Image 1 (cartoon, rainbow, N blue to C red):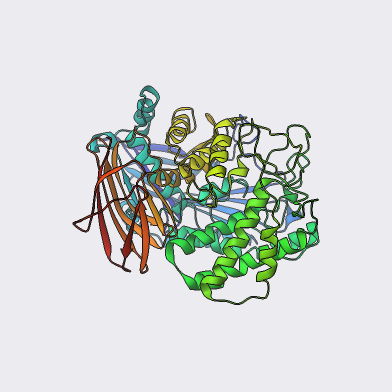
Image 2 (image 1 turned 90 degrees about the horizontal axis):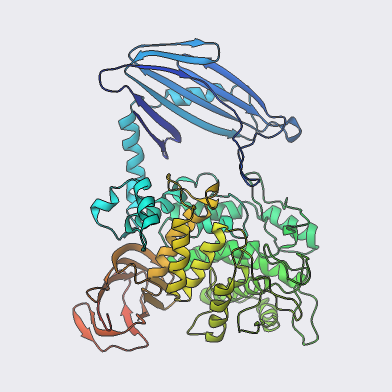
Amino acid sequence: MRRAFVSKPDQVAVQLITAHQASTLDLRLRLVTDQAVQTDSWEMGQLPENLQISRDYLPERLVLKGQYDAEFGSIGYVVATRVIVNGGSSLIEGEELVVSAADSVLLLTKVERYAHLEEDSDSQMVESLKKLEGDYDKLLARHADFHTPIMQRCELKLSSGEDYLLSVEELLAQQHSDSDLSSALVEKLFDMGRYFLLTDSGEIPPVVGHTNINVNLQVCSGNLADLSESMEVFFSWVEGMLEQFRENANHIFGTRGIVADVHPDAENGYLNHYDFNWPHHYWISAAGWLYNEFWGHYLITGDKKFLEERIIPGLKEIALFYEDFLTDFDEDGYHIFYPSYSPESWPENTGCMISINAVMDIMVCREVLDNLLDGLRILGTEDEKIPIYEAILNKLPPYLLDEEGALKEWAWPGLEERYNHRHVSHHYDVWPGNAITWENTPELARAVLLSNRKRGQQDDSAHGIIHRALTAARLKDSTDVYANLKQLLEHGFINTSLMTNHFPYRVYFPDLIGALPACFIEMLIYSQPGLIELLPALPREMPKGSLSGVRCFTFAVMKKLAWNLNEGWIEAEIVSLVDQEILIKYRHGLMDLIVNGKEKERSILGNTLSFTAGKTVKIEMRLVGI
C-alpha cells in the first residue's frame, strides 16, 4: 500500500510504502529521466537541449542533479530523496537502490531550483532532509495543521455525505451517465481548485501559459474564495517585474510606463514571446488585466494602505503608457489603438493578427483609468494628471455591434467577426471587468450575451469554455452557465486526479481547476460596491446547497448562504467590514423578506439594508413561483 502527500510547510513529497499484511517488501528504486511521451505539440515534459544530468546513489538517499545549458549560466536543479527503511536491508546495485524484506519504506523527496547551482547544492539538500522527522503521520499532521484552517474558510456543500465518499472515478462515471451535475463532483472540484491555488503558490504563483487568459484563470478564485496568502504571492510576483515591464514599454513601443510580459517565467518580466502567428509583443493589455486582481483585493478588504501603496502606483505606470501610446485619432476625434491585438484571434477578412481597435484593449484602458480616478478620489489625492486621464477616457472609441446586435471584437469599420474562436477577449468588461451590467448598460449586456452564445469553440480549449461560463454567470444566463459546465465536467477535461486538461482527454493545464471555484461562486453570489445579488445564475439543476466564507466585492463577507428552491427559501448571513448600505437583490421574486428576525417590506428592485462594521446581518427570504 502506498500513501502519499506533498507537505506545504516542509516543502517535501512524502511517500509511505507498506507491506501487505504479514508479507514484506522487496523494492528496486532508481532515478528515471525518460522523456514523457507527447501526444500533442502543446504537451510539456520534454527535457531541454544540452541538459547535463548526474545521479548519486547511497542506501540512505538518492540524488539527481540537473545543469542547464551553460550558455544560460549556472541555472540548475537538484532532486534529493531520503530513504528510510523499516526492517529488512538496503544496498546499491549499479544504479538501483535495492530494498529487501522490509516492513515499510518512507521516501522524502525535495526539489529545488537554483539560479546558481553550486558544487555542494546537493549536499545542502540532503542535510535539510535529514533534519525532518522520519514519521509519516507526524509530517501529515503538520501539513494538515497548515492547510485545514485555510481550506475551511470557504466551503461549498451540495451533496449528501454518502456521495462525497465516492471515488473520483465513480463520480465521473456518475456524471457521464446522469442528466444533471454531480453535486459531489462539483464540491470536490471547488475544494480542489482552492487547494491547487494554495499549494501552487510558493515563490511565484501558478504561471502555466500566458497572461492573456491562462494565468488569469489560474488565480481568479483567490480573492472571492479567501486565499489571501496565494494572492499576496501573485501581487508580489507582479511587482517584482515592474522594472522589466518598463523596459518592455520602452524597447517595443518607445513609451514610458509598463507593458507586462505575456509569457511569464521564474526569472524576469521581459517580453520573450515574439511570433508571427501570435504577436504578443504587440499586446498592450496584460498589465491592466494583472492589476484587475489588485483592484479586486481592495474591494474585498477595503484596505486603503494597499490601495495607496500598491494599486495606485501600478495603475499610474499603465496610464503613463497610454499617454504615450494613444497619439493618433480617427476622423471623429477618437483615439486609435494601433498596433492592436485581440488574443489570440484576428478579423475574418484580413488574415492578419495585428489589427486596429481590439475591443479588449479599449476595455482594459478604460478600466485602468476608471479605477485610477476612483482610487485617487477615495484617497482624496489631488493629481495634476487627472485632466489627462479624463481626456483619454472621453476619447475612447465606441464599440460596434454585428447585424444581430452582438458585440464585435474590433471597434473599427470593415473588420469582420471570426466567430469560431476559443478566446472571448472582447467580453472583458463583463468578466473579469465589471463595467457592463444589465442595470447600468443593458444594450451592451445584451450584446455580450449574444456574442457569448454565438461564439464557436475552435479547438475545444478549456479556458475558452470556462471564460464563456464566467461571462454567462455575470450576465445571469443560467442556461448557458449550465451548458458550459456540463461540457467541462463530461467531455474529458477532468482527470481522475481532479486536475484538468487543456483539450479533451489530453494536455494537462490548470486553467480550469483554478477558475472553477470562481465560476461556482459567481453563479451563487454577484457583488460590486453597494450590491450583493443572491443566486444570480444558479441552474435549476442545483436546487439546494450552501456556500460559506465568500469575500464580496463590496467590503463584506458572506458568512453563509443556504438555499432550497424545492422548499422555496434562501438564508444569508453577511458581515460588512465597514459601515455601509448594501442593496440586496434576488431577481426571481420574493414573498417574504425577514432581516434579523423582523419582516421587511420587499421591492422587486431589491432592498437596501444598513450594515454596521463587524456585525452580522441575517437575511431570510421566502420565494415566489417555486
